[in-house]
Amino acid sequence: MDGGLTLEVDDLVVGYGDRPALRGLSLRVEAGEVLALTGPNGSGKTTLLKSVLGLVTPERGTIRVGGTDVGGLARRERARRIAWVPQSEAPMDNVPLLEYVLYGRHPHIGGFERENAYDAVRVRDALAAVDLTDRADAGILELSGGERQRALLARALAQDTPILLLDEPTSSLDIGHQLDLLDRIRALSRGEGRTVVTAMHDLNLAARYADRIAVLDHGRLVALGPPSAVLSPTLLRDVWGVTADLRHDARTGLPFLVPRLPPAIPPEAGSATARPGPIHVLGGGGAAVSTLQRLVDEGFRVTAGALNLLDSDSEAAQSLGVPFAAEMPFAPLSDEVRAENRRFMLAATAIVITPFAVGPSNLGNLEDVAGLGPGSPPVILFVQPPWTLRDFAAGRVTPIINDLLARGASPVQGVDELLALLRARTLRARDPPVADAIRSVG
Image (tube, rainbow, N blue to C red; front, top):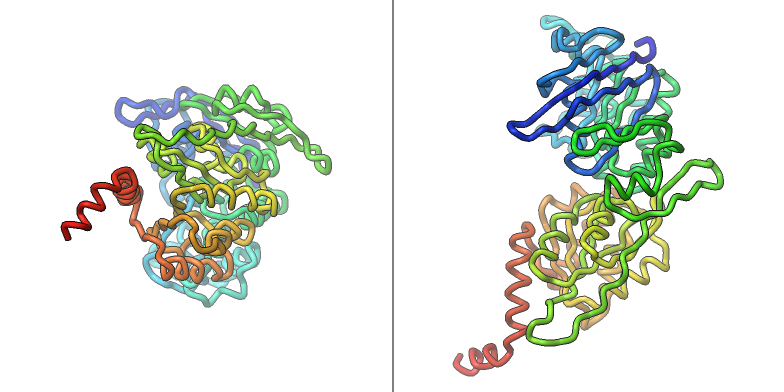
């Protein structure tokens, strides 16, 4: 692979049935450039990447790689030019990591051929690039969450393509693993000249790692340029509906946005019509978005935390008017934020733990729940997906989860089961005479 290639998208229109996903989108990514695609959920980021990969057929427009229309390329030839790193992947078999990364060499191996010495070298180089050489013989299912995401990147690197597409590669990682993965991607682009296009939810991360940022909104390109030209309070307000202040990193000079927190909602006076709660929700990385939305829709008072600003869950909390303990972007949870989060917990009628990715930087969320004393609010715990898949803290998460369950935390499979449990508890709390009558009859 000799450096990157240009990627050109011209007047691209894509729809799903009657719903337009991309509306006449045009942009050009230069060889060796890192372009971040950002925008709200449903803005068209993933659709654009899938269109380049050939997984979605455009209604109109052209996509060219190095001047060649990719629509006319056979699948194998396209795979020699463009590699893909999905958000996550759940391997079915526990194949050795070396074999898993070798899958990336398939576009270069003929139908009746076997891998050769050069293929083996490229696989070893890819493992070294993501610092997984010492795990080459481990089964893919034995890797931690952060290691598995690096394995996905290694497989794409072994594919040896000039263009690398990534769909929110950090969405399931804690902050430390996010920064590590993006550092590696940036270094690969600089060291090998690969052209990188990555969908990213976090504007501040995009500003830190991308040469340029493309902002999509309802399928249209609304901003494109270097971070210093694109990031602004006006952009965040118009596209995301969030009020923010623009600041600059004193060390790098890079811009970053700090959303303004919603005002705290005072508890409502106790009455027959008072909203139940508050329910305190722990999450991060988008794990709590649907829970927050459903709780608010059901009329519960809700608090949340501790969350990093511009995280998917913190954006959801802001849009819903949910008070939350907020930490700065990229930062581990500080003692002050953890103390505020504990105050929210102790004021709650129940604590809900959604299945968020937990690493060293946000492990304090779980540690603080486990450390609450007698008389603390009841804990309700999502148990799907399994917590072993969300443990990015060297195995420290699972013992805490098991201890909470042993101490009486209520396991739930999803939001519907959570709401049914909360409704039942609310009815019992509101109608003690009925409960007393039932006990007396029994």
